Each structure stands twice: as C-alpha cells, then as structure tokens.
Image (tube, rainbow, N blue to C red; front, side, top):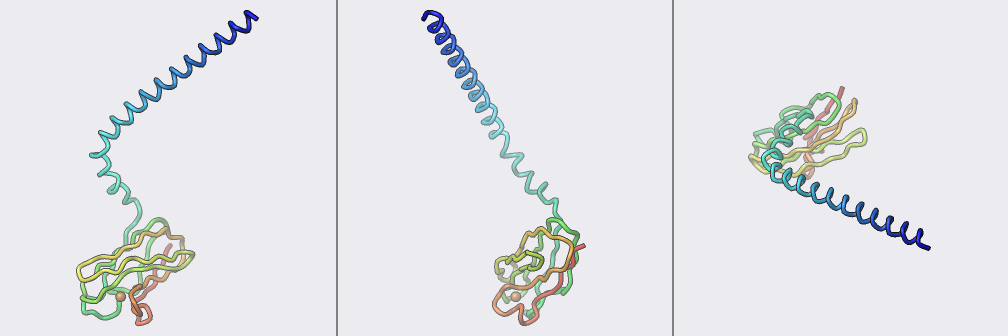
Length: 147
Ligand SMILES: [Cu+2]
C-alpha cells in the first residue's frame, strides 16, 4: 500500500514537473514569437519582392480601343508566371488564360488600369484572351507558348 502511495506521489510530481516544464517552454516560445512578430513588420515587406521568383509577362491592350492586344503571341518558361496586362484604352479589358488544366480570369481593368493572373505553367501551348464581353470572339486573344 505504501509503495503504491509513494509511486503515485512520484508520478504526480513527475506530471507536475512535466507540466511546469512544458508551460515554461510555451511561455518562452510565446516570448520569442512575440518578439519575432515585433521584428516582422519591417521584414514582411521584403517577402513580396522576394516572392517575385516566378517570371512575369507583360502585355498591353490596343491603345486605340481595338479589340486586340498589342501582341498575339507570348512565350515563357515553365513554372510560375504572372501575366500582367495594362490597359491604355478607354475600353475595359482584362487578361485571362486557359489550357493544360488552367482556366484563370483576371479582373476587368479600365483605362490606365492593369489586370493580372498568376499561373503555374507546364510546357505546352495556352491561350490568353480578354474575358470582357465578346472581346475574345472579336479576336482579343493570343497564344502563349511555354517551354
Ligand atoms: Cu477586352
């Protein structure tokens, strides 16, 4: 009986010690993470720039208001690519891409605005087009070749 009581007491002490140990760790982790958080704001402005590891493609809508882009063919290496279209015309336009399992539409952008999509591309051919109204049918499209 005595032994059991002693064992139980030891087990309790062990539990308490463990509990204390872990709560101490938590407390110190919290202290660490809060100081990291405090240090984060300056460094968190860096990742977006560093995040630009993917390639970027740029194109423009026809400035005269015609329903076309300034190019009908783009090429890129496989991987993450951000396609950004700027719109100098008074007609709203956007950028979209489809093919090989990708189907992404960017927002419609007014004059002076931009529309962008970020896609992960595999080698092959994709179609980029304007998702606004019937612009694609009117010829506002092109081929993106990925190598
Ligand atoms: Cu358009």
